[in-house]
Image 1: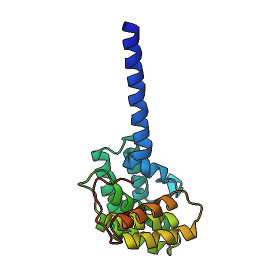
Image 2: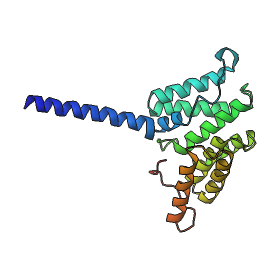
Image 3: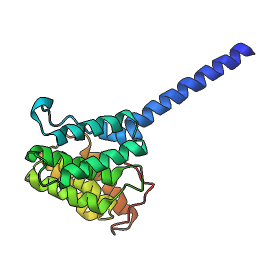
Image 4: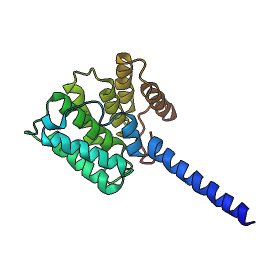
Length: 200
């Protein structure tokens, strides 16, 4: 009896740990950000970059390592906004586009409803897209997601299709298109309002 009970507890503990790992890597906001390559698109020697860039990278690492806790999420958002809105940040165009894009993705998809802001996400995503001359598929995908979260699904689908034309083999674009099509089909062709409990 004791052996069976111990075995059951061990299996339950292992199952919980596995479920926690799957959530953190595949479903949490931090996990989705990490899978999209946040903090990896632009490599810079820390000795030759603006201090604000290092602050952004530190905030991203803290957010991911903390499993998207509210305090680390709030710090990340404040850091993104500081870097995105600063007129004297010292960031070059690729860095600025990166910050705008990541800030937009965070604002559109964060699990913390108090921090989510699809309209601000659209504004920042559009700036990132313009900085990259509408040639960066990931940034177009971010804009499409922000539009979707704001209920502008037709526009989201159009932007996502442009991203797919630029990078037909990108694994994350076709599922996005299917998600947008499904949303339009469920609403009879009308752009539905995004529900806070919808997750990517």
